[in-house]
Image (cartoon, helix red, strand yellow):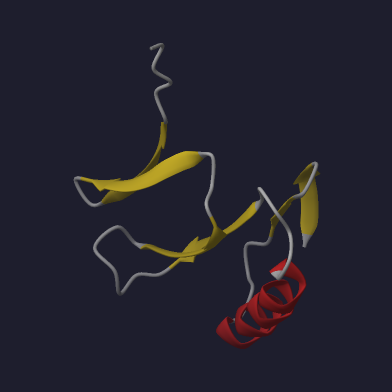
Length: 80
């Protein structure tokens, strides 16, 4: 996998088995990490959006499906 940014990794040909093993390790490591999140996205032709998605924690954005595509939406901050 290539690290294309700080903590951002990519691979164009990662098998499902390798992806599952990576996720299992991330799931073990994630325990006890406050205020953090891990998002894994991969090509999945069996889904309407063509993307599979797994999330650990709460990302600082909302991941929503819009017309069959998973998009990231920034959360609005409100001034009271």
